[in-house]
Image (cartoon, helix red, strand yellow):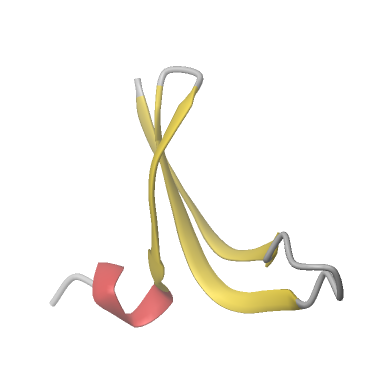
Length: 44
């Protein structure tokens, strides 16, 4: 099953662990398939 988690907050993995916001996390099953800017997933 595919899901999109909108407005996700991701730690960028650097030493400072800065939080990145405004992201959409796309998953398929138990795997993350993509992390994209939220505006790229808006349907018109």
